[in-house]
Length: 417
Image 1: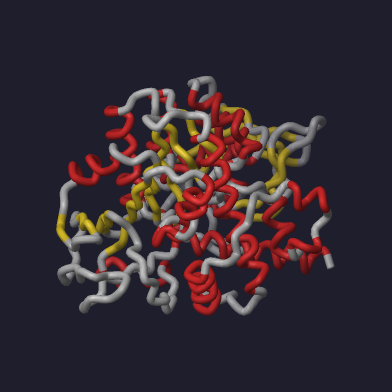
Image 2 (image 1 turned 45 degrees about the horizontal axis):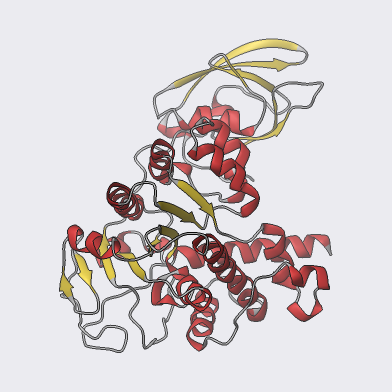
């Protein structure tokens, strides 16, 4: 039973993360309810469109409109650096025009992490310590390099970061339990939940039908997705209700939490009717064709709504720096035993090619002490193909040193047998 629950929770996590990253805005060749002014074909990377009018515009026009809104939603494609550059560009402009009255709301964090975010914005944490305290690689699981520039800007400028999302345990609970079956204590922890939006439900139904794991429980998925958006809206409302109207929040979240307005925006407006702007990104058709495995094939319903006020057109880009992989499964050391224990080696990996073995205890990399998984992954993230690392390790109660070179051949992401 425990394994079944874990499997269901894992499936829901995959579905939710995919829902955030789905890029499903395809410009229509003829006028439709959701595209009254069809965009020119083909759309070109670098284009910016004002969707209510269909006109091309400049960055300056988008920013001018953003400066007039109290909440600026910027939807993202999680794995595309170009999408994150749009976010950083807009936040920089807002911070320049409205210093000390701008905050950044992020889907990626939960309220239990707010004290760490406050320390980060105050400049009290190194990047590595920040990653450790928010447990980034477990809670968000997307390469931190995609968010580094945005978060560093917040730290450098002292910009408050708002943790918006629901706590993982609450999401897991709601994924398998109807609200009426929850205890009174659990129900009291939930935000006000609206399940009556037909367009929102149509989006979830379409997504479920297009997802490779989409034959699961639609009601459970709807509960979790609604919890996600209602919680983010509630946290924004709580924050903004303590500020005057010249205080702004830029919200970054996956596109499906923002586009068409029925995710976070409408739910915040129900609580607190502040002015807002929807900004999103889409990729060129050529980019989607070159990277088809990234894009879910979803038959998007014909909503009578515009997806965004402004739409940026980008190409899909891969991270220029993604570090290297050692190719091991590790377990942290204990109070009695320092270092990290190699449980398994992946075949054809850098570790296997240089005679690292299961049972070895890695003590240091390039002289830096290893105490947990983050110490190792953080050090490897700073290396490139062609670089080397010196590992000091314990094998059969004897310390030895092994130099590992990271080559293209041992970085092929082999799967664990």
